[in-house]
Structure formats: C-alpha cells, structure tokens
Image (cartoon, rainbow, N blue to C red; front, side, top):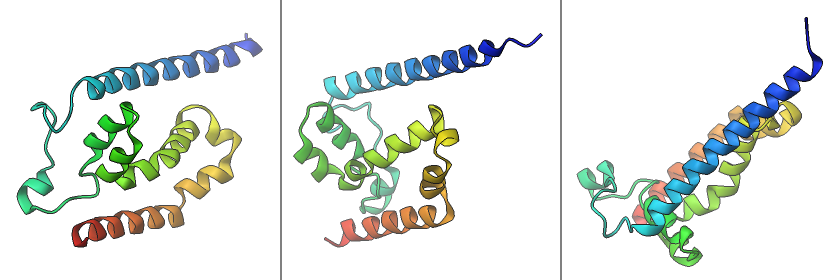
Length: 136
C-alpha cells in the first residue's frame, strides 16, 4: 500500500539530515579555523605544488582565507585568496542545487552552473588566476 505522505516525510527527513550534517561539519571546521591559524599551527597541510615549485597554485592561501573569514576580516581573507572569496556565492548556490532540492525546481540554473560552457568558464578563470597570481 502506498502512503502519499511517506515520500514527503522521507524527503523532509533527508533534507534535515543533510542540513544537520553540513551544519556540524561547518561548525567544527569553522571552530578549528577560528582557534588555530594555518600560518602558525603545524597540523594544517602545506601545498605540495608550492613546496615543490615555489609557485602558488589557485588554492594557495585558502586556509588562511578561511581563518580570516571566521574572524570576520574580509580584507585579509581576500588578500590571502581572492578567488576563494569571489567563489563563495557560486559554491553556496551549487551546494543548494545539489543537496537541497534545487536541481529539481530550477533545472535551468543547474544547467547554467554545471553545463559545458560553465565548466569551461570556471576552468579558464582558475587558469587565469593561477597564471596571474604568479606573475604579479
């Protein structure tokens, strides 16, 4: 026998579970980055690309940027890794689309953010940032 409300209840349960897990991960991660500075603490991993080449990869400075963000220092966060800070809205929308039912409600937005042209645009932006940050 099919219960019409069981699907909605199941979806709601999945939504709440996902939200809870994401909030716990963000809280614990935020607490670690709030309490410890990646510049001073030894347990944060170093970038292998930077260690081997001396050049910065697109992700270099992300840990410092997150540390500064949880301390509400947007200027230092931006100077640590501007690409990460600029990418936060894109990342949040992608997470919402993927994990909170947005992909069913807004397939055009999902296609715009995940489509072939979006992938190429993101790739070009990352490569341009990678080259630019090492030239300047």
